[in-house]
Image 1 (spheres, rainbow, N blue to C red):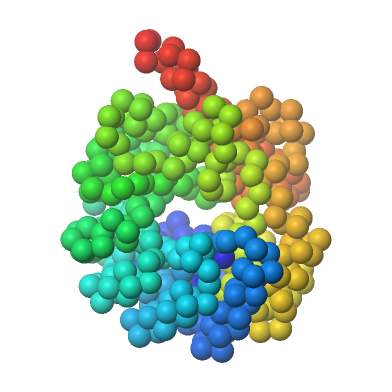
Image 2 (image 1 turned 90 degrees about the vertical axis):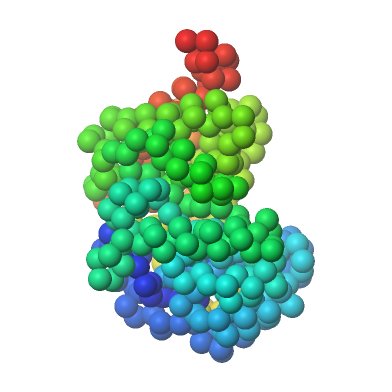
Length: 368
Ligand code: SF4
């Protein structure tokens, strides 16, 4: 469950799929989630946890969720913690610039794991992650990382960093930088794009800039005896070895992330906005103010979305890498004429990376 508690952001990252990839849905959303929407969410989530008898994670997201302010954050997290079973974990995905000691204490009180977005050293980060005046954000985010690491409950609080890949950077330098931040984990995301709008830094559908970059990160990771965890690499390696992935975007597990916007409307994973405007909307006009979440997740329309990680294209269905790659993120399969019925725009990159992983596993790469 991703709760969009604030629909605006105090940064204006140039690659952001919410504000800068053609979808204007945020303009018509209330700036902050109201008390009445929050009250409906508490009821709905409590019912869902009881009726489906299976825990889920709740992630506060935005925009920038800390724009909610300390008092309202405290109320929101207190209610979620009080109403949901302890197996439902709470998380915060933040750009870090508003993460002061008061916010950290609130998160610590309610057992909230914090992930902070950061792309690397100043030059790499501040090329894209800028504020509304065009100023870089890296120095402020580094202060937030120091603050969370110095907190008495740092171990419970600090989940890790989330970085967007720029294949023009030096992967060895980026890996060393992240390791030196002391983060317990770093997750890498590819830049958004699709067959009609190639991702930044990718020359053609067949080129492998991202695959080569990630393979160098893989080499650093596997050669390091005390690395920070890299979730996407762990997931892919586990899948090659016959295990399961933990998050969406690789493998064939079903996820069906539910987004609840600031006005209470219920939508699909908002990364789909990068494919085309409104691609994240269900055809049904669902809202936590009027509809039961438990009933919604059992509709045919929601179930079709829930299995969307499983790709439909003939190339993917017959691909020897399918169980590991999973056709990539659904948003990255988009082409206007054939919609999502295509391999990922990162198909060649994923094949390159999976081949390197198999070489490592078979002992061929290390020996080479
Ligand atoms: S995107 Fe490419 S590598 Fe991935 S499953 Fe589809 S065809 Fe295979």
